[in-house]
Length: 269
Ligand SMILES: NC(=O)C1=CN([C@@H]2O[C@H](COP(=O)(O)OP(=O)(O)OC[C@H]3O[C@@H](n4cnc5c(N)ncnc54)[C@H](OP(=O)(O)O)[C@@H]3O)[C@@H](O)[C@H]2O)C=CC1
Ligand SMILES: O=C(O)C1=N[C@H](C(=O)O)C[C@H](O)C1
Figure (cartoon, rainbow, N blue to C red):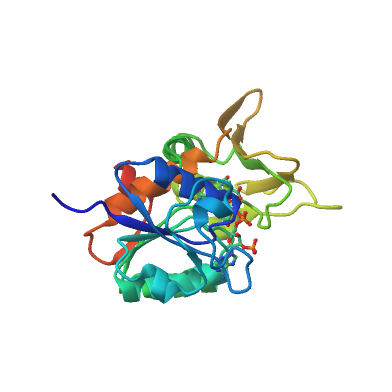
């Protein structure tokens, strides 16, 4: 019988890190093989189960990626762009699948990640949930069917600790709308209205971000026409949906050829 694949969680004290550690512990398909935090974090050297306020697991939190990734089948990473770039190199060197949930990358950082994908398996998505990835397909389809008389607006809402905007999900949805219209998002995105902006540009894809309280993640894609409006909506109420998607991506990536994949590959959409 083959061994259950070992998965390392980076940023393990974070909102997603802790959710991942719980979901992996509850899974019979993967096991927690390592837990990582940055140098100086007060969880370093502690058992991850105890640090999270539960029973000991035998997995000690470390700040050394090379040590944590050695022998692991996958690394699940929901941290910050600069940390994820370093983890990409370390995961490729260790031969581990790198599942990237981190958002907020610059174009240069995405190029750098792409270069590492020549040497390792990366599965990256701004949203790992089944619902959002279905919504991406719906958005593309609706955008294909409508012309630029229909104004596209992506509105997202998140908790007050989120540091990047627009959200990774909003950008996925904007990309899908742009693809449906056959245009490059970079040419039509309208990402920050304030003051005397002038009238809306025909064909623009607009983005708005709400930040408040403990909102897990909500996304609307609005197609606003003359006399009618279509609203496609996803509401996340539990971060477990992202963690389960990430575990599914980790299992899917094992044994694949090096390259950059996303959740549509994992889910077969
Ligand atoms: N793709 C998806 O489905 C989803 C993506 N996300 C994205 O995941 C990311 C994390 O979100 P969230 O969990 O809410 O954020 P948190 O701030 O709660 O967690 C991030 C964690 O990463 C740690 N960290 C930062 N730098 C390093 C490093 N160099 N080495 C190790 N750990 C590090 C942080 O430590 P410290 O706090 O000490 O800085 C923190 O514990 C964001 O980019 C978010 O947008 C979130 C949910 C779903
Ligand atoms: O930071 C978050 O919380 C989330 N981030 C992702 C994003 O940027 O879209 C996914 C989800 O919406 C939660």
